[in-house]
Structure formats: C-alpha cells, structure tokens
Image 1 (cartoon, rainbow, N blue to C red):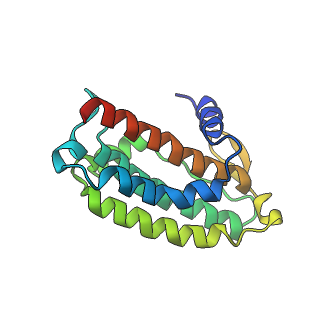
Image 2: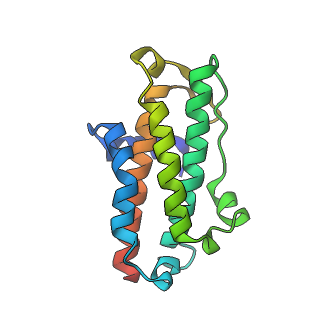
Length: 167
C-alpha cells in the first residue's frame, strides 16, 4: 500500500474523534481484548503471511517508540526529518512472532502514558510545527497526532478481525 492511501484510510478511521482520547483509551482496550486469551491464540497468525495478535502488539510498541521520537523532534527542531521505517523488516528483525504479549502490552501502556504526557503539552502553535516525512513531504504535528490515533484504530480493527478468524 502506498503512503497516501494509507494516510487517507487511517485519518478516515479516526474521523472527528479526539485523537488524545483514542490514544488514551487504546491500552485499556487492548488489555480487555487480549488478557483473557491463551498464549496459543495470541500467537496464532490470522492466516498464511498474516500477523498474530502478539505480532500486532509488538508492532504497536515499536510504532509508539517511533511516534514518540517524531513528536519530540517536531517539538524541539525546525522542520526536522521524520524518518520512516519498514514495518516488515522490523517484524522479522525484532522477532515479533516470539515477543511476549504481556510484556508488549505493559511496555506499550507505559510508553503511551509517557508520550501522552508530552502530547498534552502541545499548544495550538506546536501543532502547526512541520517535519519532513520522506514519502509524504512536510507534515504538521497535528497530522502526526491524528495518524497515531488512526493507527491505533487500524490495529484495534485488525485485532478484532484476527479474533474472529482464530478465536
């Protein structure tokens, strides 16, 4: 999927919901949906070449690290580069298939709390600060905030789909 349709779809998932509210509720949503599941269900991929819930959780942790870095760079530098990453390479290189789901959830919960602390300090002027994404060009912090929340919703929907298939 190219970057622009991804952005359009991700922003559409968010709609007019408040990004900070979505970001704040995601860790609890994940806990409610995954804590009752067995290790076997958490690690069972949706299908051939598809991700398991454990892999989605590990991806969410690494995405939170990347988004948190972009947030901090945007708040402290003028028009900084916003490096991208290849999630497929990270999936393999960082062995998401064998990541501990409970550890992933705990790590995401802590990182999200820490990042929300910074997000909540952003002023209206801060939200207009621009960074240079390698594929999409100049993007404001406000769009990054929407993309983080939409990304949460995208993967929450993915987890629901995986549960329908494997559960």
